[in-house]
Length: 353
Ligand SMILES: [Zn+2]
Image 1 (cartoon, rainbow, N blue to C red):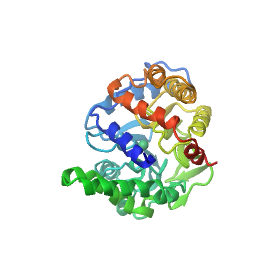
Image 2 (cartoon, helix red, strand yellow):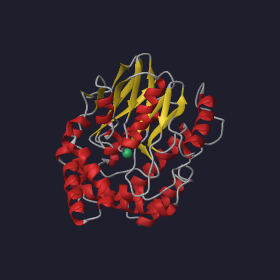
Image 3 (tube, rainbow, N blue to C red):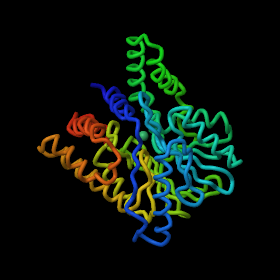
Protein backbone atom coordinates (compact mmCIF):
# COMPACT_ATOMS: atom_id res chain seq x y z
CA UNK A 1 0.00 0.00 0.00
CA UNK A 2 1.35 3.41 -0.91
CA UNK A 3 2.19 5.63 2.01
CA UNK A 4 -0.13 8.37 0.86
CA UNK A 5 -3.03 5.96 0.66
CA UNK A 6 -2.23 4.65 4.09
CA UNK A 7 -2.06 8.21 5.40
CA UNK A 8 -5.47 8.96 3.95
CA UNK A 9 -6.80 5.79 5.55
CA UNK A 10 -5.37 6.61 8.95
CA UNK A 11 -6.70 10.13 8.74
CA UNK A 12 -10.04 8.71 7.71
CA UNK A 13 -10.09 6.36 10.68
CA UNK A 14 -9.24 9.37 12.83
CA UNK A 15 -12.03 11.38 11.33
CA UNK A 16 -14.72 8.83 12.02
CA UNK A 17 -15.10 9.78 15.61
CA UNK A 18 -17.35 12.48 16.91
CA UNK A 19 -15.90 13.32 20.32
CA UNK A 20 -12.75 15.38 20.88
CA UNK A 21 -10.17 14.54 23.50
CA UNK A 22 -11.03 16.33 26.69
CA UNK A 23 -7.84 15.73 28.60
CA UNK A 24 -7.68 17.47 31.94
CA UNK A 25 -4.17 17.89 33.32
CA UNK A 26 -3.21 16.91 36.80
CA UNK A 27 -4.82 19.56 38.95
CA UNK A 28 -3.88 23.13 39.78
CA UNK A 29 -0.57 22.34 41.52
CA UNK A 30 2.53 22.52 39.32
CA UNK A 31 6.19 22.49 40.24
CA UNK A 32 7.80 23.55 37.02
CA UNK A 33 8.53 27.21 37.58
CA UNK A 34 7.13 30.63 38.34
CA UNK A 35 3.74 31.35 36.92
CA UNK A 36 3.11 27.68 36.24
CA UNK A 37 0.17 27.48 38.61
CA UNK A 38 -1.57 30.25 36.79
CA UNK A 39 -0.95 28.63 33.45
CA UNK A 40 -2.05 25.23 34.70
CA UNK A 41 -5.36 26.54 36.03
CA UNK A 42 -5.78 28.25 32.69
CA UNK A 43 -5.22 24.93 30.96
CA UNK A 44 -7.85 23.22 33.06
CA UNK A 45 -10.32 25.94 32.13
CA UNK A 46 -9.20 25.77 28.55
CA UNK A 47 -9.70 22.03 28.33
CA UNK A 48 -13.24 22.49 29.58
CA UNK A 49 -13.79 25.22 27.01
CA UNK A 50 -12.36 23.08 24.26
CA UNK A 51 -14.59 20.16 25.05
CA UNK A 52 -17.59 22.49 24.91
CA UNK A 53 -18.75 22.66 21.33
CA UNK A 54 -18.81 26.04 19.68
CA UNK A 55 -15.87 27.58 21.58
CA UNK A 56 -13.97 29.14 18.69
CA UNK A 57 -10.87 30.31 20.57
CA UNK A 58 -9.54 30.11 24.11
CA UNK A 59 -6.69 31.88 25.87
CA UNK A 60 -3.68 29.68 26.63
CA UNK A 61 -1.66 32.50 28.19
CA UNK A 62 -1.52 36.28 27.91
CA UNK A 63 -1.70 37.11 24.20
CA UNK A 64 -1.70 33.46 23.13
CA UNK A 65 -4.94 31.89 21.93
CA UNK A 66 -5.87 28.43 20.70
CA UNK A 67 -8.40 27.67 18.02
CA UNK A 68 -8.72 23.93 18.50
CA UNK A 69 -8.69 21.64 15.50
CA UNK A 70 -11.46 19.11 15.28
CA UNK A 71 -12.44 15.72 13.96
CA UNK A 72 -15.79 15.83 12.23
CA UNK A 73 -17.41 12.51 11.30
CA UNK A 74 -16.77 11.60 7.68
CA UNK A 75 -14.25 14.38 7.28
CA UNK A 76 -10.48 14.82 7.58
CA UNK A 77 -9.13 16.55 10.70
CA UNK A 78 -7.95 20.14 11.19
CA UNK A 79 -4.80 20.75 13.21
CA UNK A 80 -4.78 23.18 16.14
CA UNK A 81 -4.19 26.87 15.39
CA UNK A 82 -2.21 28.96 17.88
CA UNK A 83 -2.45 32.73 17.61
CA UNK A 84 0.19 35.04 19.11
CA UNK A 85 -0.72 38.71 19.50
CA UNK A 86 2.08 41.11 18.69
CA UNK A 87 2.23 44.90 19.01
CA UNK A 88 1.78 45.08 15.26
CA UNK A 89 -0.83 42.38 14.59
CA UNK A 90 -1.24 38.62 14.77
CA UNK A 91 1.01 35.64 14.15
CA UNK A 92 -0.96 32.52 13.20
CA UNK A 93 0.62 29.12 13.65
CA UNK A 94 -1.11 26.61 11.35
CA UNK A 95 -4.22 27.43 9.38
CA UNK A 96 -6.35 24.26 9.35
CA UNK A 97 -7.62 22.29 6.41
CA UNK A 98 -11.30 23.13 6.06
CA UNK A 99 -12.60 26.64 5.29
CA UNK A 100 -14.80 26.42 8.42
CA UNK A 101 -11.67 26.22 10.59
CA UNK A 102 -9.85 28.99 8.71
CA UNK A 103 -12.93 31.19 8.98
CA UNK A 104 -12.59 31.02 12.77
CA UNK A 105 -9.11 32.51 12.38
CA UNK A 106 -10.49 35.29 10.18
CA UNK A 107 -13.31 35.91 12.67
CA UNK A 108 -10.77 36.11 15.48
CA UNK A 109 -8.73 38.73 13.60
CA UNK A 110 -11.88 40.70 12.75
CA UNK A 111 -13.00 40.71 16.39
CA UNK A 112 -9.52 41.69 17.57
CA UNK A 113 -9.51 44.46 14.96
CA UNK A 114 -5.89 43.74 13.98
CA UNK A 115 -4.34 42.29 10.84
CA UNK A 116 -2.69 38.90 10.48
CA UNK A 117 0.94 39.77 9.75
CA UNK A 118 2.56 36.35 9.71
CA UNK A 119 1.75 32.66 9.36
CA UNK A 120 4.06 29.99 10.71
CA UNK A 121 3.39 26.48 9.42
CA UNK A 122 4.64 23.67 11.62
CA UNK A 123 4.79 21.30 8.62
CA UNK A 124 3.22 20.74 5.21
CA UNK A 125 0.38 18.31 6.07
CA UNK A 126 -2.85 19.67 4.62
CA UNK A 127 -4.57 19.96 8.01
CA UNK A 128 -1.94 22.59 8.92
CA UNK A 129 -1.36 24.56 5.68
CA UNK A 130 -4.80 24.25 4.05
CA UNK A 131 -5.99 27.67 5.21
CA UNK A 132 -2.94 29.57 3.89
CA UNK A 133 -4.52 30.62 0.57
CA UNK A 134 -7.67 31.95 2.30
CA UNK A 135 -5.68 33.95 4.85
CA UNK A 136 -3.37 35.31 2.15
CA UNK A 137 -6.40 36.46 0.17
CA UNK A 138 -7.81 38.27 3.21
CA UNK A 139 -4.44 39.74 4.23
CA UNK A 140 -2.32 40.15 1.08
CA UNK A 141 0.62 41.48 3.12
CA UNK A 142 0.91 38.35 5.26
CA UNK A 143 4.24 36.50 5.22
CA UNK A 144 4.37 32.73 5.55
CA UNK A 145 7.26 31.09 7.38
CA UNK A 146 7.86 27.34 7.06
CA UNK A 147 10.50 24.83 6.12
CA UNK A 148 10.93 24.19 2.41
CA UNK A 149 9.78 20.56 2.70
CA UNK A 150 6.47 21.15 0.92
CA UNK A 151 8.26 21.44 -2.43
CA UNK A 152 9.30 17.79 -2.39
CA UNK A 153 5.95 16.79 -0.87
CA UNK A 154 4.03 18.40 -3.75
CA UNK A 155 6.08 16.36 -6.22
CA UNK A 156 5.98 13.15 -4.16
CA UNK A 157 3.61 12.35 -1.33
CA UNK A 158 0.91 14.88 -2.20
CA UNK A 159 1.08 14.07 -5.93
CA UNK A 160 0.53 10.38 -5.15
CA UNK A 161 -2.26 11.20 -2.71
CA UNK A 162 -3.89 13.37 -5.38
CA UNK A 163 -3.77 10.50 -7.89
CA UNK A 164 -5.45 8.23 -5.35
CA UNK A 165 -8.13 10.85 -4.68
CA UNK A 166 -8.84 11.05 -8.41
CA UNK A 167 -9.13 7.28 -8.49
CA UNK A 168 -11.57 7.29 -5.56
CA UNK A 169 -13.61 10.06 -7.20
CA UNK A 170 -13.78 8.11 -10.48
CA UNK A 171 -15.00 4.98 -8.65
CA UNK A 172 -17.56 6.75 -6.47
CA UNK A 173 -20.46 8.37 -8.31
CA UNK A 174 -22.05 9.93 -5.17
CA UNK A 175 -21.19 13.67 -5.38
CA UNK A 176 -21.63 14.05 -1.59
CA UNK A 177 -18.95 11.43 -0.95
CA UNK A 178 -16.72 13.04 -3.55
CA UNK A 179 -16.90 16.47 -1.91
CA UNK A 180 -14.09 16.11 0.67
CA UNK A 181 -11.86 14.38 -1.88
CA UNK A 182 -12.44 17.12 -4.42
CA UNK A 183 -11.68 19.67 -1.72
CA UNK A 184 -8.33 17.97 -1.05
CA UNK A 185 -7.56 17.87 -4.79
CA UNK A 186 -8.30 21.61 -4.98
CA UNK A 187 -6.05 22.24 -1.98
CA UNK A 188 -3.17 20.30 -3.51
CA UNK A 189 -3.73 22.17 -6.77
CA UNK A 190 -3.20 25.47 -4.99
CA UNK A 191 0.42 24.29 -4.90
CA UNK A 192 2.84 27.07 -4.05
CA UNK A 193 0.09 29.13 -2.37
CA UNK A 194 0.35 26.55 0.44
CA UNK A 195 4.08 27.11 0.85
CA UNK A 196 6.31 29.64 2.58
CA UNK A 197 7.29 33.15 1.46
CA UNK A 198 10.30 32.78 3.68
CA UNK A 199 11.90 29.37 4.07
CA UNK A 200 13.04 28.61 7.61
CA UNK A 201 16.47 27.05 7.16
CA UNK A 202 17.74 27.29 10.74
CA UNK A 203 16.47 27.88 14.27
CA UNK A 204 16.48 31.52 15.32
CA UNK A 205 14.61 34.14 17.30
CA UNK A 206 12.52 36.44 15.15
CA UNK A 207 10.29 39.40 15.76
CA UNK A 208 6.99 38.69 13.99
CA UNK A 209 4.16 41.24 14.21
CA UNK A 210 6.19 42.89 16.96
CA UNK A 211 6.39 39.74 19.11
CA UNK A 212 9.64 37.90 19.83
CA UNK A 213 9.28 34.23 18.98
CA UNK A 214 11.81 31.40 18.79
CA UNK A 215 11.29 29.48 15.56
CA UNK A 216 12.96 26.10 15.98
CA UNK A 217 13.63 23.85 13.00
CA UNK A 218 13.74 20.05 13.04
CA UNK A 219 14.70 18.12 9.94
CA UNK A 220 13.42 14.61 9.21
CA UNK A 221 11.11 14.29 12.20
CA UNK A 222 7.32 14.35 11.56
CA UNK A 223 8.17 15.45 8.01
CA UNK A 224 11.39 16.44 6.25
CA UNK A 225 11.08 19.90 7.84
CA UNK A 226 9.14 20.79 11.01
CA UNK A 227 9.00 24.14 12.78
CA UNK A 228 7.99 24.55 16.42
CA UNK A 229 7.56 27.84 18.22
CA UNK A 230 8.51 28.97 21.71
CA UNK A 231 7.14 32.23 23.07
CA UNK A 232 9.63 33.54 25.67
CA UNK A 233 7.11 36.01 27.15
CA UNK A 234 4.65 33.32 28.24
CA UNK A 235 6.78 30.15 27.94
CA UNK A 236 4.15 28.62 25.68
CA UNK A 237 5.59 26.03 23.32
CA UNK A 238 3.57 25.30 20.17
CA UNK A 239 4.78 21.90 19.05
CA UNK A 240 2.89 21.19 15.83
CA UNK A 241 2.53 17.46 15.21
CA UNK A 242 5.69 16.60 17.17
CA UNK A 243 3.08 16.21 19.90
CA UNK A 244 -0.06 14.57 18.57
CA UNK A 245 -2.85 12.76 20.34
CA UNK A 246 -4.36 10.24 20.52
CA UNK A 247 -1.35 8.70 18.71
CA UNK A 248 1.64 10.08 16.80
CA UNK A 249 0.94 10.18 13.07
CA UNK A 250 4.03 8.43 11.74
CA UNK A 251 3.12 8.34 8.03
CA UNK A 252 5.77 10.76 6.75
CA UNK A 253 8.07 10.51 9.75
CA UNK A 254 11.57 9.52 10.70
CA UNK A 255 10.73 7.97 14.09
CA UNK A 256 14.25 8.11 15.55
CA UNK A 257 14.77 11.78 14.72
CA UNK A 258 11.27 12.60 15.95
CA UNK A 259 12.33 11.06 19.26
CA UNK A 260 15.46 13.24 19.27
CA UNK A 261 13.34 16.32 18.52
CA UNK A 262 11.13 15.60 21.54
CA UNK A 263 14.32 15.61 23.61
CA UNK A 264 15.06 19.12 22.35
CA UNK A 265 11.54 20.30 23.21
CA UNK A 266 12.01 18.89 26.69
CA UNK A 267 15.09 21.12 27.20
CA UNK A 268 13.07 24.32 26.66
CA UNK A 269 11.85 26.03 29.82
CA UNK A 270 8.19 25.85 28.83
CA UNK A 271 5.17 26.05 31.07
CA UNK A 272 2.67 24.61 28.61
CA UNK A 273 2.82 22.71 25.32
CA UNK A 274 0.14 23.14 22.71
CA UNK A 275 0.11 19.98 20.58
CA UNK A 276 -0.73 19.77 16.88
CA UNK A 277 -3.81 17.76 17.82
CA UNK A 278 -5.25 17.57 21.31
CA UNK A 279 -5.55 19.83 24.35
CA UNK A 280 -2.69 21.85 25.92
CA UNK A 281 -0.34 19.94 28.21
CA UNK A 282 1.63 20.54 31.36
CA UNK A 283 5.29 19.51 31.45
CA UNK A 284 4.33 16.37 33.34
CA UNK A 285 1.88 15.42 30.61
CA UNK A 286 4.44 16.19 27.91
CA UNK A 287 7.00 13.93 29.59
CA UNK A 288 4.38 11.15 29.74
CA UNK A 289 3.84 11.59 26.02
CA UNK A 290 7.58 11.42 25.43
CA UNK A 291 7.94 8.24 27.46
CA UNK A 292 5.00 6.68 25.64
CA UNK A 293 6.59 7.67 22.31
CA UNK A 294 9.98 6.16 23.24
CA UNK A 295 8.37 2.94 24.42
CA UNK A 296 6.29 2.67 21.25
CA UNK A 297 9.42 2.99 19.10
CA UNK A 298 11.31 0.47 21.22
CA UNK A 299 8.41 -1.96 21.01
CA UNK A 300 8.17 -1.44 17.25
CA UNK A 301 11.85 -2.36 16.93
CA UNK A 302 11.50 -5.45 19.16
CA UNK A 303 10.03 -8.88 18.50
CA UNK A 304 7.17 -8.22 20.92
CA UNK A 305 3.67 -8.75 19.59
CA UNK A 306 1.74 -5.90 18.05
CA UNK A 307 -0.88 -6.30 20.79
CA UNK A 308 1.77 -5.73 23.42
CA UNK A 309 2.97 -2.51 21.68
CA UNK A 310 -0.61 -1.27 21.50
CA UNK A 311 -1.26 -2.10 25.16
CA UNK A 312 1.99 -0.33 26.05
CA UNK A 313 0.93 2.92 24.39
CA UNK A 314 -2.53 2.78 25.95
CA UNK A 315 -0.94 2.29 29.38
CA UNK A 316 1.85 4.89 29.00
CA UNK A 317 -0.38 7.55 27.42
CA UNK A 318 -3.40 6.48 29.45
CA UNK A 319 -3.93 9.75 31.29
CA UNK A 320 -3.44 11.79 28.12
CA UNK A 321 -6.09 9.89 26.19
CA UNK A 322 -8.49 9.07 28.98
CA UNK A 323 -11.30 10.77 27.03
CA UNK A 324 -10.67 8.61 23.97
CA UNK A 325 -12.50 5.48 22.97
CA UNK A 326 -10.00 2.58 22.82
CA UNK A 327 -12.04 1.25 19.90
CA UNK A 328 -10.91 4.34 18.03
CA UNK A 329 -7.30 4.42 19.24
CA UNK A 330 -6.45 0.73 18.77
CA UNK A 331 -6.96 0.59 14.98
CA UNK A 332 -4.73 3.66 14.65
CA UNK A 333 -2.04 2.00 16.78
CA UNK A 334 -2.46 -1.24 14.86
CA UNK A 335 -1.72 0.68 11.69
CA UNK A 336 1.20 2.68 13.07
CA UNK A 337 3.00 -0.33 14.58
CA UNK A 338 2.90 -1.73 11.03
CA UNK A 339 4.35 1.55 9.79
CA UNK A 340 7.16 1.29 12.37
CA UNK A 341 7.88 -2.28 11.28
CA UNK A 342 7.46 -1.50 7.58
CA UNK A 343 9.81 -0.84 4.73
CA UNK A 344 13.29 -0.09 6.09
CA UNK A 345 14.41 1.56 2.86
CA UNK A 346 11.45 3.92 2.98
CA UNK A 347 12.18 4.84 6.60
CA UNK A 348 15.85 5.43 5.77
CA UNK A 349 14.78 7.81 3.03
CA UNK A 350 12.43 9.66 5.40
CA UNK A 351 15.39 9.92 7.79
CA UNK A 352 17.38 11.69 5.07
CA UNK A 353 19.79 8.79 4.54
ZN1 LIG B 1 -1.77 17.23 11.88
